[in-house]
Image (cartoon, rainbow, N blue to C red; front, side, top):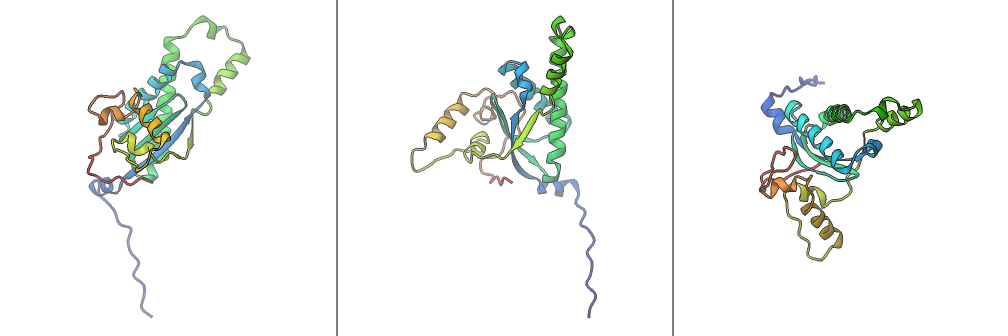
Length: 195
């Protein structure tokens, strides 16, 4: 019987690794920490954190939308890097929150009871909860791809209207404007495969 040849693990250079990356849609439910801030402040904290990760941790965002309760991201990333990138994003959010708290630091917080401080700390235990992205129309809409149906779908029309009026969404960038988060625009002729 002939010996089976064992193959050495294939080593890929950076260019080859770049080609192996794919697009991943991630849905993050925003935690209770938002109770301490206005809707606008929360969105700015998240946008600043995404921009920090784009600049310093090489996060490649192809699409995003920040709503009152959820952050949806389409990242160009290797699947094994997703958790590490999210951890860096969560770290950045905590830094932004601390920065905002230092700016707004007041006597009320300094004289707060232990119970109030514990309640405040508990708000920051789960910054985000990852959930499956269930809306199949959302990803194409936030990555600049039109969605056409041969019939009227009220859910789709409502989503299109919401995205059109949303200031914290990559649809702005795909329409030619400049949104608050740095986005790596996809070519319209390029097929996007999501995992």
